[in-house]
Length: 244
Image 1 (cartoon, helix red, strand yellow):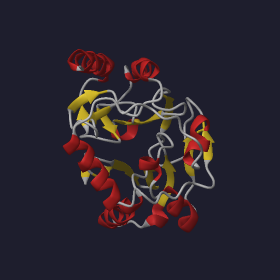
Image 2 (cartoon, rainbow, N blue to C red):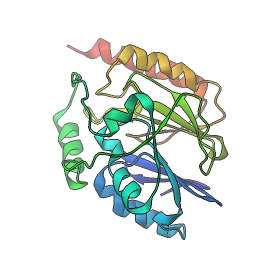
Image 3 (cartoon, helix red, strand yellow):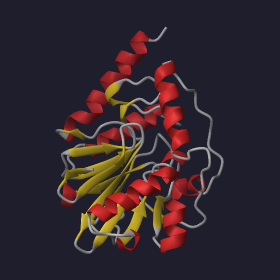
Image 4 (spheres, rainbow, N blue to C red):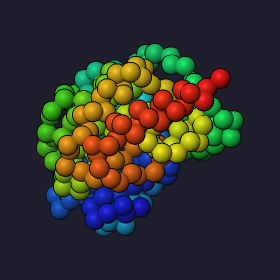
């Protein structure tokens, strides 16, 4: 799905991954679920591309619903997979802290679980090799993506800023559709390790040269990035007031 020139999404509002298409090749941001492989290949074909044109895959963090086809792309096509050093073990299937589920609605939860099952989410293939990155790194990939540390959802959660397409890919630093409640709009993501730290990290988005905010879950958002942290905090406060 084309969002804008050179900017594409695969998946949907439940789980999404993204492509930046440049003359020198393609950068993929996040790898969704294993079953998104077919959507990746189909989207590349629409661009006149194949997996051989992918120059790198950048993970916003190491959770299973973001590493889906990453190892397949790395193993079968030699594509390097970049992840923050603090999430490198997580992306290889290492231990992850258990977080409380919080508010949830049965329909939304069943929708998320059903979609994940259809897309192979019960058979995660973890990475065996990664390229570790750090806050502030500029990667030698199409679009010249830059890493912005966004710890909180996980220790190595990052945003990927690509000024060439006016976008920042935020993974689970925030969400625009809570997969557990179905609530839409800018808000904190569920399953976050350190919620207060995640909220504080959102201040790093202000001032970026971008209008697109592209989450791993939920609809793409466009607007003034200086308002994002405030809107997410407001949504968090409102949700807390309505909890029993």
